[in-house]
Image 1 (cartoon, rainbow, N blue to C red):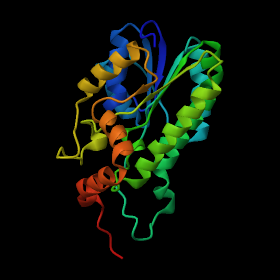
Image 2 (cartoon, rainbow, N blue to C red):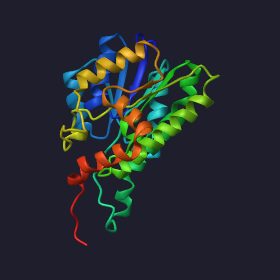
Image 3 (cartoon, helix red, strand yellow):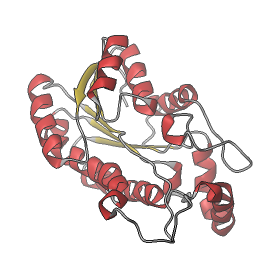
Length: 257
C-alpha cells in the first residue's frame, strides 16, 4: 500500500486504534478525516490535533452513512482510502433471555452493518480513484472469545466479507486489506488483562507492526498474537478455544434468571 499523499477516511477515529492510525497517516503526509459518534470527543480531538478533519457520524445508521458519503465526496473528491475501524465489544451472558433484543444486536449493526454500509456508500469514489479499503477485524475472527460471543462472531463475519470483497474488486484497481489486531491496550479492551493466554500490546506497537506490513504490500495483517491464534486455530482448535474460554469466563456478566 502506498502510505503517502493519500486522502483517508477512518471510522471510529476519535480514540484507540483509529486515532493511532490517523495520527501516523498524518505524520506521513496524508490528509485524514476521522468520524465518531460523539461530537464533544471529536471537538477535543480536533483541538489537540488540528490537522485532522473530524465529522460526527454513526455507522449503525444507514441514513447517516448516506449523508456522510454525500458530504465527503463533495468536500474530498480525491478520497482514496477507507478504513472501516468503528466497532464495539460487549461481554454477554447467553444463558438467559436478553431484556433488550435491539441492544443485543448493537455489535452486529456497528461492527458488521457499518463496514458493509460504509464500503457500499464509498465504493464508487474508491473505484474511480483506484483506492484502498482497510477493514479492521480481529484475531478473534479465527478463535472466539466466549465472553464476547457476538463481537467475536462479527469479526469472523468481517473476515469472510473482506475475502469476498477482495475477489469481487480484484479487477477494479481497488486494494482490499484486512487488519486483524490482537488484544490492544485501548478502552475497548479495558476489562481484558494479560495472562497465560492473552497478550496485550500497545497501540504504538500495533501501529509499528501494521505499517511495516502495509509498506510491504501485505493484504492480511496479523500483528502480535493474531498470527499465533490463526496458527493455533489450525493446529489445535479445541485446545485454544478452551483456553480462551478459561481466560474470559470471569468476564461473562452475572444476570438474574
